[in-house]
Image (cartoon, rainbow, N blue to C red; front, top):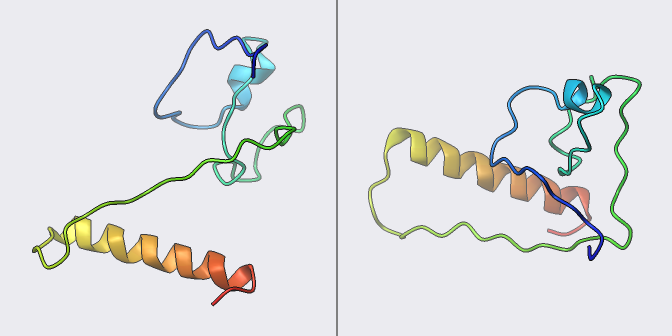
Length: 91
């Protein structure tokens, strides 16, 4: 990380990062779950070595009425987390 030179950062990368990389503009640092598998054969995912561990938190108030979209989002997050735990052998 001491040698990392980030000249641009984005909160949201719209579309595939392949054109950015194949045009020689640089590298894209992202999580492997962002890539959909339809990337160019000239672009590949390389895990960081050593791995960069992160922790995330989704914080919301219990017992507060959520909008329909927020409720759907929260249900999807819960499904995704449960699926991840099941695939890792944790229940």
